[in-house]
Length: 143
Image 1 (tube, rainbow, N blue to C red):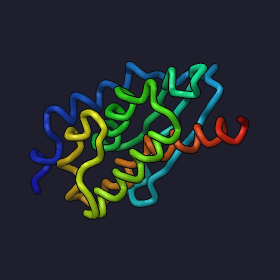
Image 2: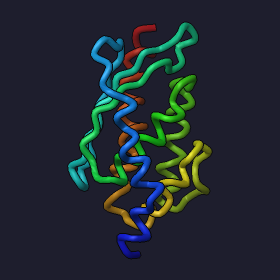
Image 3: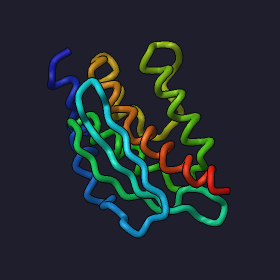
């Protein structure tokens, strides 16, 4: 697959969306993830509402356009999600990347579908969900 098919205009547009989600130093929860395959990193700051669902998200992403687009897809639809929903989406995404299931039920996931054929990008695609699970697990442990 050529770079033109991988880096679609929609994917690149999503990648630049990250400015809408600056780090939130005052957030109670923080998580980070790193892709061993490519070295991409992502740090997430989360605040929760009274129902323990994501209320606010901040990101610091150092990744390729695929990783940045995945972070934007996550951030667009993270509000209102519980730890169980984030974990379920992560597991579904990981299974889909391995070819074991259909694409996960997460809005706008189609923006990163072209990267599935690039195994080296899979780690970057999982970063936002992994970092959020780390952050949310500290909230679960505290309750």
